[in-house]
Length: 294
Image (cartoon, rainbow, N blue to C red; front, side, top):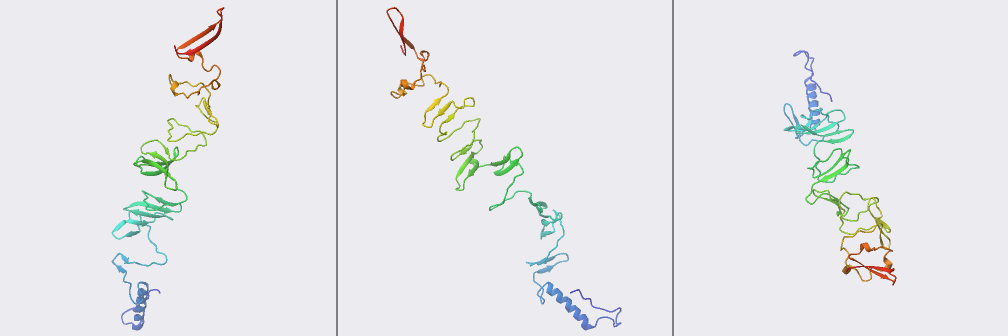
């Protein structure tokens, strides 16, 4: 209903104004409109209070569209009493912004959600993709980062490990001990290609190569060949330290003629060489025997 103004005539007592009844009816209609909009029709809502500049609604239920001014980062248009630099404002078309203490914290637009500062979650954050756009730092307790040169970066700080990767049973799979560049693999490490490193490869278990596989160097890749039956073949003559093979360490009959190649041991390789020559009556040598020892 539109506001109904009481007709008071052109001048006092000219008889052109509303009658007393019509004027009273307009007053009633205007009050009914107010009491209906702000109350039950017969009583005003107890949740409404007002001052010269502020209307306060206690626990209101709003239907339809509520429009607000744009506001600003320091004076948001939707705010709390007594904390006027914290709330919601609208920085531009199709944007909703949240500010606290006069500093913008969140911006929501058609591209998504942008957060300024740290996100702290007490439950699980789920999504299709989590994409980092900046580098990590040495002070990060647990962080995911990215740089164009390094790609995906994982970093952390723990009393035992800096980074721990676990399986779905909550068991450690890969560990990087705190403050080191070492990597500990709890289970079997499988490689489809070459394993290359500039340091030591230490294992607490066995190293197993495929049947008929080789162990070698970059220049001699088959220096040690291990057949499927366990027979080991060296591509070069092994060089052993002096006194590294003692008679006491040899099993009886472990060295037989059948296991020795022709000329595999020359006289030059015998310690304290002794030679026995067998000659005929004419002085010609019929046989030569070499032995070690005096």
